[in-house]
Length: 337
Image (cartoon, rainbow, N blue to C red; front, side, top):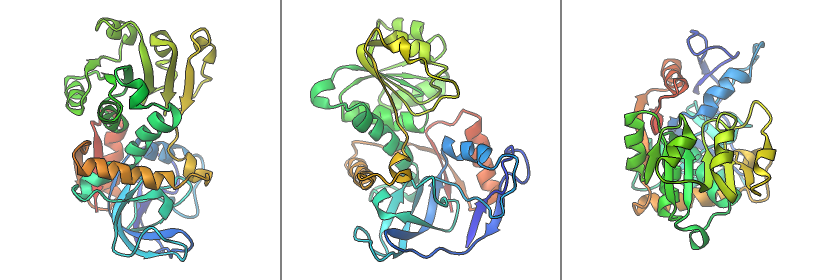
């Protein structure tokens, strides 16, 4: 089958940063679905893995990445009970397995949801990873609930990106929060308002920007950009006994002491935790994706795809990574095969 991969970590400008390859079509076993992929979306994790997973080495076998896909189940393993051949599905994948830049992929059924019936293939491809990340951040890590938290304030750092776009919607529509989102350009500010943000502020001089809106402190903060870059601002803006969550990791140690006097809770969220460690509740991702599909089907949530490229080829994937690495992507970028 056709796939796009790489054998060494190279800048995206290098002609060999991605290669067109032919690899063996996999065979499902156990809980595997064999999915014929129709579209994928690109995420920051894609280029981070490309940049770092094969540094100073040349792999014998091309590494296939990609974590978001929509397709049709072609065949199933012997333990599969949730899906049948012919089912239209969407999922965000497993970072420990071969990825979705390929004609076919194996994926554990417990990580897969039924494709939202009302969405096009490209619209559905932009949903899984960001929806799972935002959902897990709010409901699994921060334990937010509309009964307890409606009307409270949430600051989203990085409102116009993929995760921010769906997080704004979940925070408004499901939790009833007052959402303050960050954006630095007119077009990204407009996008945040379109997604439902109540207030949009510039991430530069974040503390002053938030307070210029008459907001001294916020109940909750989620960081979708850079933990260390905004750590001091988050520590200053968070209310006593508030909660901060981040998905971005940290190259330097996080100074948790800055949260001590306020008794603030801090949480990490990584969407791949459940699949990487085969947690007992791994099937929650199947359930979350089905809940999100239902919310999309009734119009509570809206799709966030903003650009579509075409073709499973190294050149198309390079174009997608080039745009993503620019840091200027709004919403989601999808590749239709």
